Image (cartoon, rainbow, N blue to C red; front, side, top):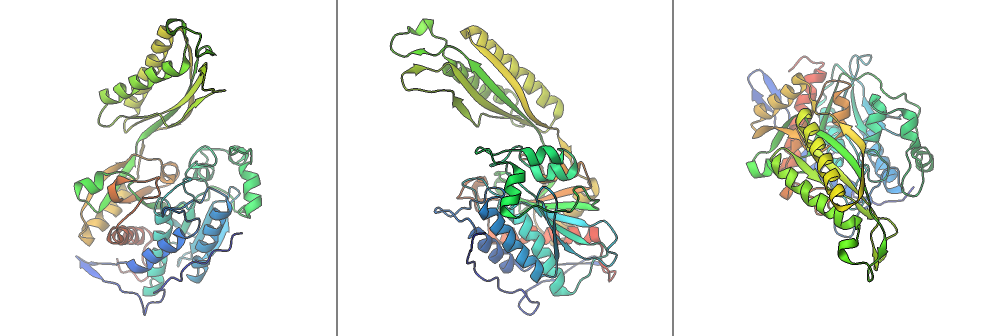
Length: 440
């Protein structure tokens, strides 16, 4: 375990908290302690801090374990109990008045990209903690218990697939397959869990009343539209494909251009065609080639074996299927025209996922009652909430990120937006969990 020195979090007691209670019809809307939440985010950012102001906490690394330990320390100070399941998902629990009821869960992830930002994932975890701290400060007990989840390997930067922990929890992936997944160095999830002490005994897939996840948008829509809150109605469909293009390796100085079977030039033509395909499906259709690899590459050898990845996205399953068909046809046509062989293999498919109408309505009602500008939005990125939505009633709260930038050390968010998103989370969760004192 790494020994990190992090700043103390100020304002943990009710005497230091600054809240405003807003009357709205017959309900009292609560606000969290914004400076305390911001201080928590900045303290967590010091765990695995990068030279350019970001964070690096790859899943189940020493840095990830240190971040989990810091979060656990804060949760214990807030009177919560901790548990882990067999894939390392970490859960912090605040008892409800009827503790036998299924809990209302909040959460996200603490793992990051290799050069990640300070808010992606961590915001949802620490916003959940701030909800609990606020309820503690105000002496509010909920009917249903509350839990905060830290999902394992959401990013997929170390192990594949992404959202591995929530997939195992919800049954979208078997526990055996999740534990057997290996990183680039051949280390399995099971081995990494043992090495960093994050394996647990809690069974995966315990019943939940509902799940709420707060997150930065990771795109520019809210900022461009001048909105503070995104009421997320669901997640778009995602299709990942792996493409291998085979030509013939040959000498760069002795093989005439017309006689070459250059896998890289063929892949380049395919990729140009895929960009044109995206334009035909605009604005909802998205096409990304994120990885390219030349096997046994050499400066003076014509590439004979080329691989690249293809990421297709659309909010409509049927339209995404059409995008995939056209992409496959395009790749085949280019390969035939250049005398190449092309294989397209499916890697992952995530159907479009609508969120629960009642949970979405709770988020929208909270934003409206608080007077925060908001709009409905479909999540363009994959999140643990996508898996949870097929398991229990689920909703998400988006806030803007500066410039729409994410998966980048320069990722940023405004303190006011961070606080207001947590305000919405607090009131939506409280509406679902129920106040034991009967006040709405």
